[in-house]
Length: 121
Image (tube, rainbow, N blue to C red):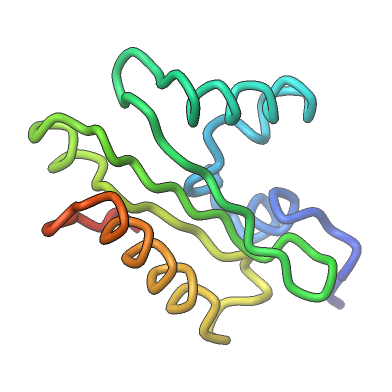
């Protein structure tokens, strides 16, 4: 029997997945601290990854996916992590949300002047 009240991270754990792609510590930080860190990383950057953007995909009032765009990666890190990373809630996979997030990410990358990107998924 499915429990629809599970959080996105709860669904991942229930399915045996040990990490939440593109979450940047969502499951290990208090929510307020996580929001502060995401904001700081977008404005000031992080020592290794530089500045990056994190988008929440919310459908019908429910967190459906996470999308990370890392625009300032050095080449070696781009090959390791990719410029774009995203994850979709396990119960929402196969519904096209990943495709929508990727399309948005590519649009943002174009706006930032990027002509080549590496996708991590």
